[in-house]
Image 1 (cartoon, rainbow, N blue to C red):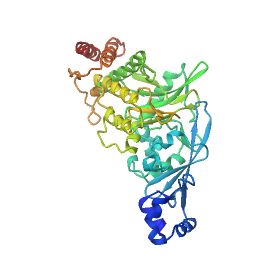
Image 2 (image 1 turned 30 degrees about the vertical axis):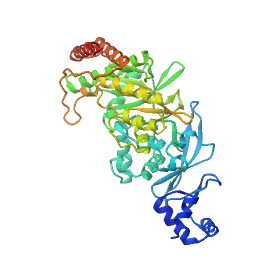
Image 3 (image 1 turned 135 degrees about the vertical axis):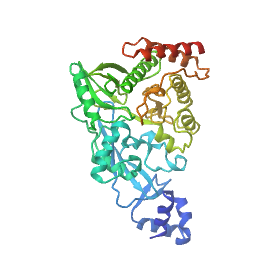
Image 4 (image 1 turned 60 degrees about the horizontal axis):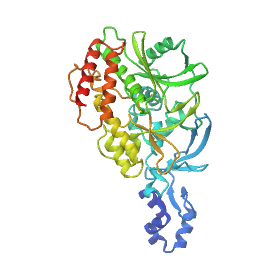
Length: 444
């Protein structure tokens, strides 16, 4: 093993000058070093001739072709993801690089290499209710762990390339695949959703791209001359089941929260809620989809926080986004909006504002390519049944957080008031929501 291979295997990709400083005692002169570079197998040359860097390709790992689908539904090859030594990855573009690809580059953005799988590849790490079913099927076939967090980066990429899925966002490994049997019409929507809910509870993968532990599936709703890709959450059968009844109640409030925030000028995913087959269905129109085939880029806060070495609380948005703002990854307006949304969440008793429940749309602006996505999963999770025991927490008065955000209080009060008037909630939830609305109004 040559000194060059040893250095790159141990320390990862380096600019030419830094690599020479590491190995110059083995070569003596710059000319000898450059001749050795030309003869080194598995070497990847990065950057321009003026700012050359080098990395060592990882043995036995094939590159993955990454495609992007635009809002018109057209697929374009972006380039190839290449596995490197020292747990690094590089991206070789076949067209002009997208500005957002520079986010997370090493060497203060000068070295076009990522430590670990790039943040924009997080879409290919299945999670939540739907992700578990997909992971189980693939893990059993490959003999891999059932916990996707135990998969290596190589396994994540390999699985995504082998098994078609409707990945969230606008990237795919290989050309994007439109899953069959997704479309429903308004006329057959109720009957079809009832069937899909039953199948999802039996462990079938019905659609994809949605995280979170609440049972759900995806679909495409055909309306006149348009189609709407949607995510559909559903409760258990409500009759005689206190846990299913409580889930139905909090899902109604989730739907109302998005509707009220939209009326107040906050971008939120469009929602609709109804009861059929003794289940409550919450249908949310996807904001990472445009019509039948178009897509737009999105990424959750979690992989961005990891990429930029955030080590603070994982169940909270503001500190993580503040960390990104200090590093120049997002601008101050995104931090201010995050603070506003988090305050609304606290007033709604959403104690599950983890870093996969806040996402960014990925655009081509620079230096700030990221803007907060429409709000989703704004749910009063304080009151959901226990995941372990199924016990339903008794409703009781909770303190209103101290805040100077008057608009957040107004929005939260309106959400609780609309909940108290909604026809689909239980009498218990209706009474508590009315009381909570009065409590928030008093805090104003």
